[in-house]
Image 1 (cartoon, chains in turn brown, red):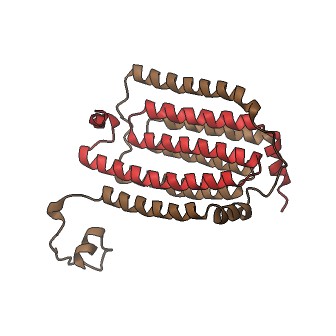
Image 2 (cartoon, one colour):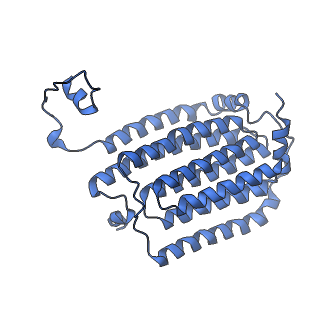
Image 3 (cartoon, chains in turn green, yellow):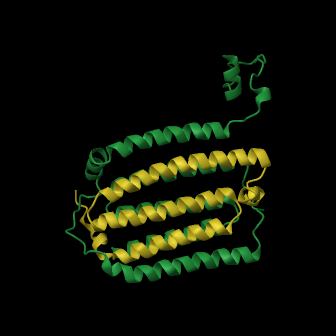
Length: 192
Length: 111
């Protein structure tokens, strides 16, 4: 059974490397989706079923679709991205590798101080136990996160709105074929 | 509810291997942020780093039978969703204003 873990680990690392090295952004997004699905597999192996479901829904279903929408709507899928200079790229890879080396060396010493695994509880990752923890101890952070979501939503709309004050009070241009086609955002706002 | 064949994997895979895996993913994310100039790929590398941290939290939570770690992963997912919304909105604004998503176009922000 543990070979499944190493298979998923191999898939995650390979697709993560492909995210960084792919020329086209759409290929990067697809590789990142594969990486996220393998991480969801890791969650299933860890018996964190609630997290696996939320991960697939939120990341693969919402966030990556958002990325794909932005790439599609703004036609960003150009493979001819200007690359950094060779020195910068080498420095990036070397610094990432050095950080990895440092972390691994620190962990090899530090892992011995971790307390031994207490009695294994098979129900810890199920929806029931996570929900009990979420709505008992963590109820206030849960409510505060809704405020965070609201502010993020308003902030995204404020940022992404076209800020051209000249065409804000847009005059009503008579939409002669109104009803024949679904109204777009601009016309429906001015028409009402 | 017979989850035994799956959950035996928790006890057979040592915790160190989860730590190594998530550190590797985190460093790939950091190298990607430094490596690329495309803002969308930089945002995706940020997501990769978030996910490596989530995996580490979930691994520790499962190995120590404490559901609080998984609740924390849930909150990190919420924050990541909010972050990517604002980040993509900034990207849209950047594409609209300078007609490029190259981060080197914004090098005045370094001053």
